[in-house]
Image (cartoon, rainbow, N blue to C red; front, top):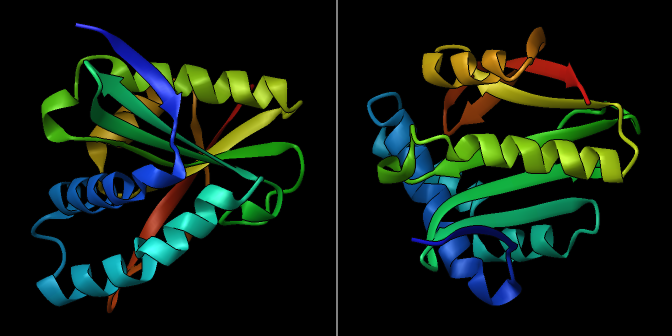
Length: 171
């Protein structure tokens, strides 16, 4: 079994859309209506938007592959691509997604290591992310990686407004 991380190519946009929708739905199933999911997917994961994000020089997209099968997805942002104005010292982890069957096996650690390496390469001193306040598994994971809660912001899915905790750590 070979595992590796690679930069996502534009011709993989459909696979990017699929992993984004599937993993978001799997994580939040039961929290939102079908209509709210569809509204969110149409707004956040449409092909045009994903291609624009892939083209943005301030965003970095990676697939985690196992035997060339996509297992996970990482999206990093700097500068104006960040979802909150954190300034030039920060790198944002906007998305860490893994299909269910690939979760809980230490692979998320490799994405965190990649994010830290990218932050160092770009001379960033801090990394931040937003995580749903009730996602206990993710909160535990990030706390174990040295992230601390520093604030919160709204996260809108369809008609539902949730609270994401903002977590940060030094590089």
